[in-house]
Length: 284
Length: 280
Image 1 (cartoon, each protein chain N blue to C red):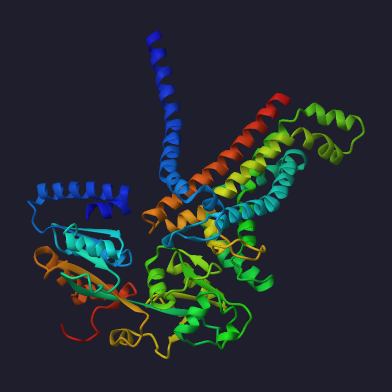
Image 2 (spheres, rainbow over the protein chains, first blue to last red; image 1 turned 90 degrees about the horizontal axis):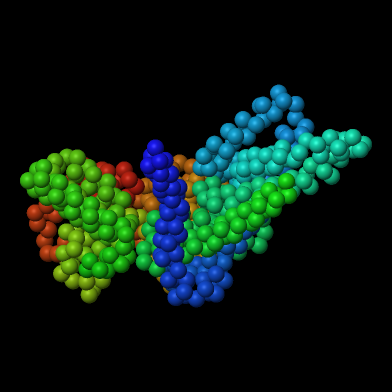
């Protein structure tokens, strides 16, 4: 019996390790492929260079870093408030019958393939921006709007969990002391759920920064730092996806190096989430 | 030569080599080597059409195995010279110093500039096109059109079409970083279809009714103009062999030049190797 238990424990450990091992292998592979060129070109000129012409030996990824940051913040500005408002509605306001319709609908939104978002973007959103606001239509704005919608399921479900985790007694006490329901939500429940909501927003950012296909289709991919929301730009993920097909030699290495930068971006975001969630657990 | 190819595509090279060994072993085991394997390497522009023709060839010639690898035109020329590949693929003419190879034109690739139907511009000069893509010309009004805006679309770094466009039009100049970049002809075409202010370059034959191909330096793009050399924005797709092709290589090249294969070439949007109607 003991031997069987031991065997099962080891087998489970092995399976758990396989996930970690694949992460480690990917990390090692990307670093091994990408780091040499970063060091050869100099970190400064790689990260802060404006010119990206890998077939002519120019490897500056600053425009892509700015592009990724812009669309991610834009998506957060649009999807964040909307998502949090929706989660408040679902957790605190909505009658059960309404919530039962809205919740699955949001889950369905998460299941729509990103290429479909991109397709809707390029056929509906891009001409709309071009004809009514200006510029070529393919723009940071278009990407931010598409991403803002795409991060909604992530933001809504996690902040809803956070709000529902706030003890019922807090709300009851607030109401008993004479708060209106709105005051109870804004003054008591939301502050209590804040670490969880922050985590939701950061995870939404992670989703936005990693999204590739939909963004390539609507952002125009120009290798240039955008000066306005209506300018085209390029993201880190988009750059890798677009160019890997034909890339060879140094060009290929530079794309892996772009992957390294992306890896660091996402690791920083995940660390923030873990710190936030840790604090929340201590608090509750 | 192996190292040069291997340096460009280390992982895929190894995988391909392994796949070659495996398939040739299996092929030899099953069929006793009848037909034999044939390796093509070189230009990534030629690669898609070569792969397509290779598939059709394998379907009609039982027992033959055609492997098509990338690496670029220069690598293809080197591979043909060294014998690392049976047939080298190049999307540019041979330089004077590249001797000892026999070149067969398998197709021609012409590039046309296209605009939206609502754009009144129907003709440009090479100089004007260079001005547009280098970012100097910023409005259609400067080149005989209307409108203050001008959106120009290029292909991604490393694309064969972009490489040819840079060689044939841009010469020493660079495509401006203001350019919209798309990673497929389809995406570039879709933008031109919907934006009256957009211009893009695409393969001849990929032109659809929603967009208009422009006359370049007074020459209307057509297969005939490409063959006569009057339409200069075109390049040959070459199959290279060391000396006259023989054995399986000769059989494959003969197939590529057959009317059946040339029909596929046209269907894929390229200009066929010889003027239509001319005998072999």
